[in-house]
Length: 172
Image 1 (cartoon, helix red, strand yellow):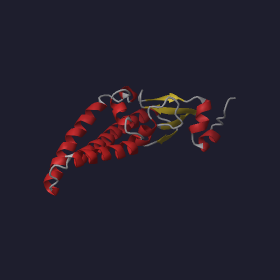
Image 2 (cartoon, helix red, strand yellow):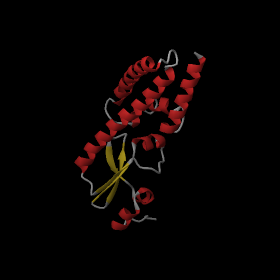
Image 3 (cartoon, one colour):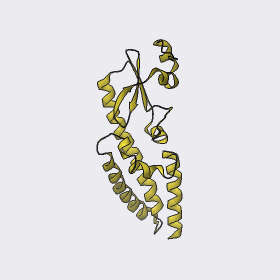
Image 4 (cartoon, helix red, strand yellow):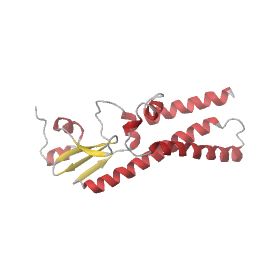
């Protein structure tokens, strides 16, 4: 029993560091910072991932004869399924928004990289970048929409060729 609990804690620690940058962040994202992802009903995917992880664990337990040592597998499956399903859902909604926004150029970044940077008040990484009529935009997962980037921020985060093409320079 102790071995299973220690193994589960170790799996959680490793995956929380890989996906979110720290062991408290997955809990914070599900509670304190839940509103930082504006995708409707994304929490249901986390619940569905738990159910999928339980089914996966039962299957593996029977196939591999894991006995009582199933909890680390459950933690691993649940975390991986949650990040994957929520990430794919958010990326799908972002793709719809990109099609409606019709930027001239667009660069998406992986959802996991956004998890690693969230929820920072002062971010130096974008969730996605777009340029439309030489105006720079960033993507907000909180609003699930593009927002106009201030020029002083744009020069720090946009690709250099965009800055040159549109003559975007720091104001001060």
